[in-house]
Image 1 (cartoon, helix red, strand yellow):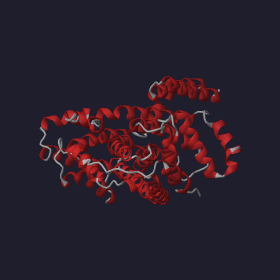
Image 2: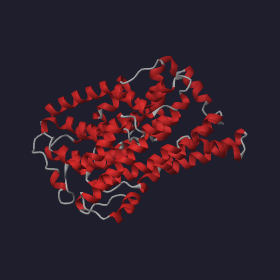
Image 3: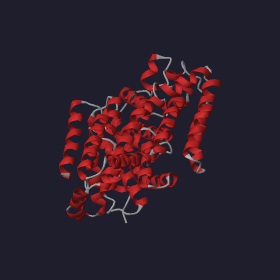
Image 4: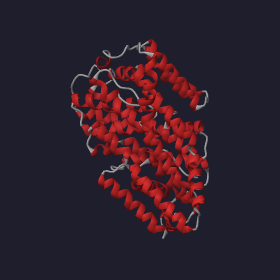
Amino acid sequence: MALATLGVFIAGLIICLALGLPLLAALVFGYLLFFLYGLHYGFSVKKILTLTGKGIWSVHRVLLVFFLIGMLTASWRASGTIPYIVSAAGGLMKPEIFPLAAFLLNSGLSLLIGTSFGTVATMGAICMSIGNMMGVDPMITGGAILGGLYVGDRCSPLSTSALVVAAITETEFYDNLRRMFRTALLPFGISCLIYIVLGLISGAEGAPADTAALFEKSYTLTPLLLLPAAAVIIMPLLKIDVKITMSTSLLLALLLYIFVQHMDFSTIPDLLICGYQARDPALSHMMNGGGMISMIMPAFTVGISCSYAEILQQTDLLQKVKSLISKVLMKGGKRLTFMIVAAVSAMVTCNQTLSSILTRQLCDEIVTDKEDMMIAIENTTIVMAALIPWSIACSVPLSTLEAPMTSILFACYLYLQPLLGWRLK
């Protein structure tokens, strides 16, 4: 019965994917399915609801931070922080080093704002446009951007995925960040070398675009606009709480919005709730977004995914799968087993959150140390999800860029991090 239930859940995910239905619909279907299985297992409705609440409560602080991140990303757009960073970075792009520049610039912005989707819609879109103008192969550009997006999505102080992994593994967030940075050095460095070689042999030509001109009509560009970004860089080094860090950066961005961009104070509530809307229609595809509303779907996705956690743990739903892992996969060693489980979980769930939860639960007897579990998930599930064409971690960025799906082949960092960036005791 347990394997049949999991099979129906997987079939539901596949059907939703095939019909183009939102992932949230598949997750709700899954919750209802597991709720019914809990009743079959002998749990009362009250017991199942209690388990549901316990699962969601385990990430309640993360869900609150989600909405703070939504406000922060809107304020960075409106204050001119993101336009200034993108404008300054645009001048660094030369044809012979373009793949490296695209990787580094998207890595840098994703580290600052902690979101792959926010980065791809701004720096990613700029890099793709400039790459096309220079004649760089879109596969190479798309791959460099895709890899860069998940450098920060994995280990930024503002990363929602890092917050979720810290919550489900019960580990300390800032300690996690330091360990993630250390394990990323080798994969990141080798990725840079590969992009240098690709740039030298690409034969790209053409003058780099003046990205500052895209924003000067709508923003006053000054180095002061870097203050919100500086807060996000400096305060985590001082081990200041992530909520205080974000709140400080948000306050600085709003002050810049009023006193540098000369916007009316009365527009702030709408900005923080509904997000930023560019005054220039030409910038709307890059700059619109953010706000608390933008985080509703991610918050629901994480909340529903975590509502499964205790039901899966307290029933026998995963026991036969764990038994299979022990008998068959473990013959290849802990590390290979963990990577296979992480990859299959990402293929089945199509998102980072639920695949992280499943991987933790399926491998909790393989990896018993909390910190080792955290780094194993971060170095496999979080980045490998972006290599699955039908996963939202891959499909959304590439569709935003209008890049070919074959760009996955050139997302070097996403391959190197699971292969080189960690080990299990």
